[in-house]
Structure formats: C-alpha cells, structure tokens
Image (tube, rainbow, N blue to C red; front, side, top):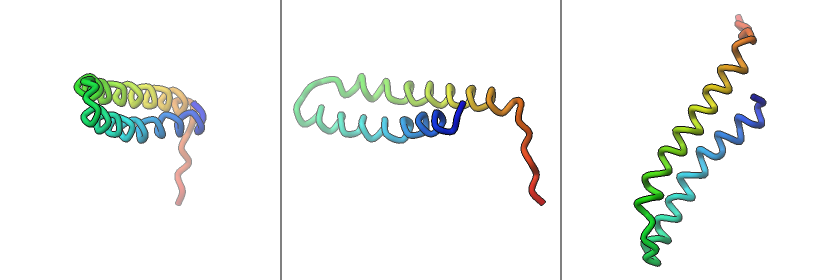
Length: 70
C-alpha cells in the first residue's frame, strides 16, 4: 500500500462520520426516515475501512525493516 492509498483510507474514515452527521440532521429536518439505517451502517463501513487499512499496511511492512534511531 502506498502512502497515498493509506492517506485516502484515513481521509475516508474522517469524512464519513461528518457526512453521516450531516445526513442525519437533514433526515430529521425533512423527515426522510432513513436515519436509523445510516446510523447502523456508518460504524460498519468505518470498521471495514480500518481492517482493510490495517491488513494492507501489515502486508506492506512485512518485508520492511524499521531503522532504529539512536
């Protein structure tokens, strides 16, 4: 995984809750009736993104050595 890909996944993790909060406010304002579905799906989506980022990061660093700075 490149740094750009990792940064993109992290950005998604930061933006999705904000977008969900905005949607929930709009839903309650306009009475769309889907707020419970969004509230249920957002944590699952964020967890999946986190697991993907962790797995790809572990795969990327398995052949790398960390240099100890003295």
